[in-house]
Amino acid sequence: MRKIYHVWFVTKYRKPVLEGKINGIVKKIFAECISRHGYNILAWETNKDHVHMLVETENRERLAGILRTLKSVSAKEVILQAEACRGKRAFWARRYGCKEVSQTDVPEVKKYIKEQKNTPHFRVGNMDLKK
Image (cartoon, rainbow, N blue to C red; front, side, top):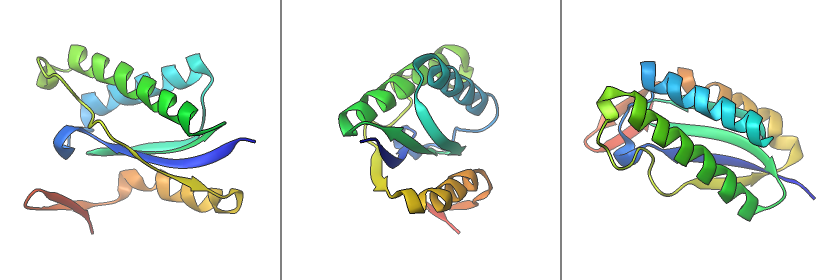
């Protein structure tokens, strides 16, 4: 039985770099990987320093593989293509968060994910908080 997961992951040190050219590269690579590998991504969006996704897959192990592919391929391309990231050893933080979502909650989570781009954030010291 397939399960649905709400997944989120952040840039290294939560740097707010998912804007402009870098965000375009990430979105292009994600779209290509999703299409090429046939991943069932129900929704996804970026916001300055993190990504949210709604992923349907067989199990958590498969989910880990999907995220490993998306993060590694996109990081390599960003580091190659974006001057601001040249010479960096990592683009994404290692970890990710995920929560299984019931079928009834899918529309609400999709809405939340789609609104990520429009959710303002503000910095307090090292912390990036939503308003």
